Image (cartoon, rainbow, N blue to C red; front, side, top):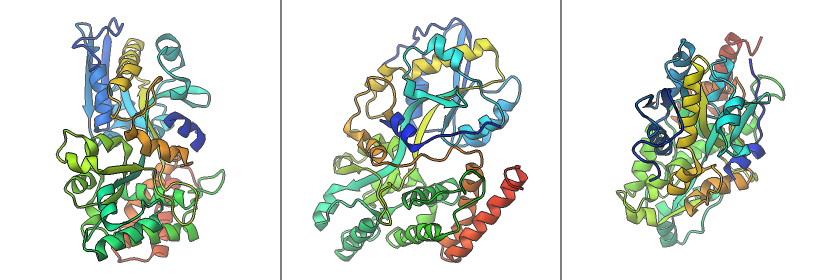
Length: 412
């Protein structure tokens, strides 16, 4: 099993119409089969990679929100169903644990001239992925609504609560806040963000022993619950896409939303250009008097499957490098916080870049973090619904995690 070491500084360093119908990608032959999450920024890269298709090169993609449940079985078979898996900090871990992706050093040396050193994700000294965009959740705020209420721009969750109270008392907006509290991955991510902002560590140093059932964990849940007082009664049904819909429907004034979705919120050609024009993007808020933003830093990139031919591996690497070349970032400046060289970040990237600059920590790349994330998503719902206390909820999380980690061999 590969063990990974990463730091917020290294991820922060990463954060710090371009193709013809048939592009000349320099690929003689091969099959490129891409598995990816389904959001706009990834689609930009994939669409560019597809232009590498020719009479001797096939390029196809499956963009789906179920990608994480598909990737391990799809890459385990031989030959693998997909030659490329697009991944992030957390979704690469199962592929590494099961030895399903190949080292890329040789391919980088042969075809990676356009890549920056900061894009090369290394584990145990080997390049295992190519990062092409940074991401984080950060504040999206309606500057017009805050100005109407005479509210100074909030920079902490405590100030956000005060702002929400004013907006309600003045009759401007009953439910001005939103968060992705949908049970499962989203709810767990909200806990992770807040816990990082509180300065918490998820595990005992150097071990898989959980370390969340403590005062920091309690304060994290208390703040998460306090925020729901100013959210719609259906807050447990919201994911990032639902938050976007509510925001563009003029029903939310402040939220911590994904930077990778910024273009859909501020697009002058979108469904609510007046809301986009009034949107203020800012770093993720602080919490509890801490100096660390309450948001995890992420990178997105691509890996190449191990159980495929060398021909398909080379074709896939070349197509993905073409899809993520610097010209793509330059032609789509608001599409993402791109990591390609010579990218001149627009104002729309300020939220992600500011969150990184303020010292946000990276989402942990430990092989057992996924088990804790799953336990958080499953066991916190009753607390958020008000039917269970914080201490019991955290005890349930640790018990569920311990059972899974023991079964996986991380704990005795």
